[in-house]
Image (cartoon, rainbow, N blue to C red; front, side, top):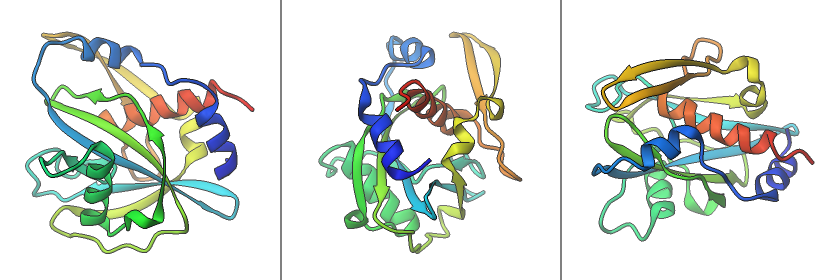
Length: 196
């Protein structure tokens, strides 16, 4: 999928909430507000997603695959500012290199975070400056990988709050799961449901 195809499909219709978002957004609970940057870039007419592997010593989700991002701070103007700031701090992506496409609906995790995904197209292949205190590795996945339903796996987990779907989207040696996989699933569903 090219950048232009993605933009056309992304903007074709209004975003809908997934079943997980509908369920979790109705729960009266205080969540820590956070934002992540879904950074996409085009190389040889193919769109790629930037993902990170979190450092193993981190308190929250150590060693897991994630988007660059983190907690909303009081000085952040909005969720977009948070996502851009965190992406710069973690992996060195400059905000001037990002064309913001839009936001997905917030995704609330069972660990108490409300994550607002911010979608951006990078103007060129990124140059990184990794904060090794937060990020162990950066890698890229072709976006078409997430558009393939056979690459999606879901298991139902029974929790005291009720049944919860946990998504998995393995890629090579990487186990992309949890909130990151759920966000990619919602984005891929939106793109697949809006063919050109």
